[in-house]
Image (cartoon, rainbow, N blue to C red; front, side, top):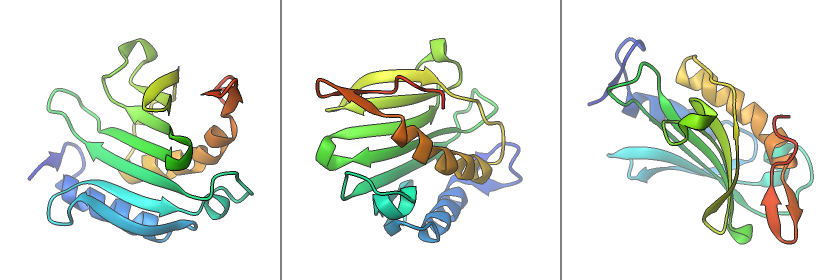
Length: 162
């Protein structure tokens, strides 16, 4: 059992259950589930109706949210990945708070196309309860998705931050 420091006995399993419940009540989120399983959750995945989720018409018919929180022993805040995935366009846009790109600071937004990173920018570090972070990032996702531009078939985030 992993306890998240400073979160008063808040476990990773409890957090993911709360993320699951939050997405179940999010307009546009359908088929919310755990990966790899409910017994051993590491991610929460939700199929998304983009038009409902973004509150605007959108080209993709389907999308997916993939959410993961974890707490490494050597840092004093949670790590997370909150990803918007469009399988038909082979596109992933995500807010990542981890140690992968220290040159961008503790948090960045990343755009992948065809499983390859094509753009990254610093994002605001949010030192708050994980569910507050999730709410903030879900509110930012529509603007981030709208900021994606494509030139010669390659997407980018030329106007980030928005």
